[in-house]
Image (tube, one colour):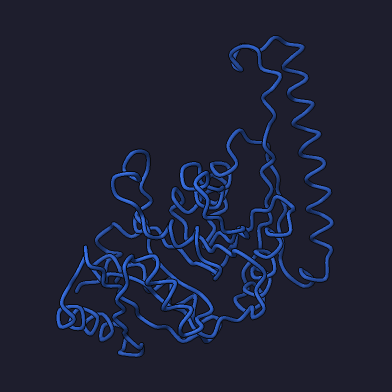
Length: 293
């Protein structure tokens, strides 16, 4: 791991993500990219932004520069903190109409290996439809995203749950999860959730998971857990064994597809009080990235 992107809005919750990132950087030798995307105000637009009059354009530019200067001062203050002492840290801030899009684009520019975001999990109806910035980054980013929903007492996760259906795509994303776990010396449980509407025989699941386990050296405990919903099953099992972190894949569904086929990862991110590592399956669609099964 070489580059860790840590977006911040200078809130207490975003600081939790920075705490974890600092520890991860010390263990992996990675560089931290501390980034702020300041939301550009749009109240002064009375017409198409592309045809703003010259005086208004100057005003827009002035506001943007003031926002960036203020953000950079805050970033510099964080960089001097004891938390980041001795680490390689790069600072940057941009103004944006869409914060989550700016985060994703910046992650591509710096070729980040991981995006770490501190956020506060919500479960109300408003968030289900609108989604938080973290949820949108999870949904659209092709880079792995680690969501930290609250302050973590143990910054060195001892037990990671990898929740999956263990199809071919899982063989492609698990190496990243495993390498992440090895940085901390974490144990990994393989978890398959069985529900009434997506039921599979235990014998069939056990065979599939055994094949997966064997591919990676038969090092992991494999568990089949029954529950009403996949999200509940993942969270309930993780609580039961006192796991420190949950890892899961996502298809990054967009638009109406999200309403007709919900993405389990988004539900887990929204409801969990544990850190969630989400790896987008699109990143591993190439045949050479999916191990032969």
